[in-house]
Image: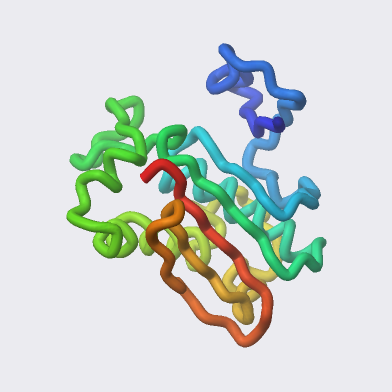
Length: 176
């Protein structure tokens, strides 16, 4: 178990846990070599910290690994999302499971929760201009020939984008 933590808040997420490693990354996840094919992302704000960690980790994996399949897992009960009224942090947050539960069905949850997340992860590189020295090329260029498939457990699967190769990024949301 590895935690990416902040130098300013080194125990913010981890005070009650004991990871094998706690790495101060401060948005530099793209400089950390990850060779696993399955990565679980937990904690952090869904549309900011978490999406940035996912995009920087993915960027590093695409540049330095040649694995034809990458599996990102997002356990919805371990991820928070900002309030609907857009109050700034530290406004009360809700679990990502709440965002999924507010949708009428899986197709709506895909459209309203997942598509904006993936659009932001791939097209807004880097999120909010952080880090100031993002790696090149943009993530969208590295993913241009990849298939991107979204899955909700065993009950829902949809292709977010079809590529021209046998390379697949599987984005799985668990507990929704």
